Amino acid sequence: MSNKKDLKASYKLMKFRIGVFLIRNTVNNKVLIEGSINLDSIIKRHQFELKSGVHKNEDLQKDWIQWGADHFQFEILSEIKQDDADKTDYKKEVKQLESMFIEEYQPFGAKGYHSGVAKRP
Image 1 (cartoon, one colour):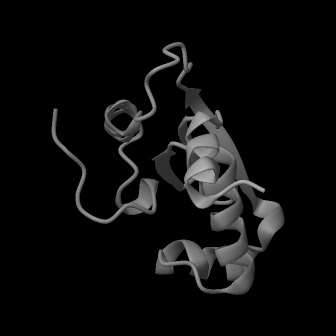
Image 2 (cartoon, one colour):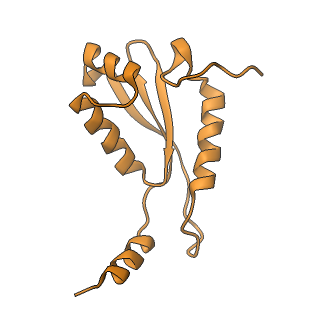
């Protein structure tokens, strides 16, 4: 039987899909962009929260309720290749990649579900 320390070490060796994804409303084309060190898990979390009616993004939740799941797509924008066996923390790279896509898509106001205002070039 493995102890807690062994389980934690095994978990750290596991490789998850890392990168940035978006949720797209196909009715109004608004998007939510987010990065994660575990894409599959974060996508499932968003889907669960939206289906349960408890998503933290009120505008996205409202549109989900209004138009239904069939009008939303979950898309992987980019994945980070895990090529360094010793590296276990990809958070910085994920944040940089997420920022790049937010800059590109400008998902604010009528274009997206992010709060704030669009950045000016």
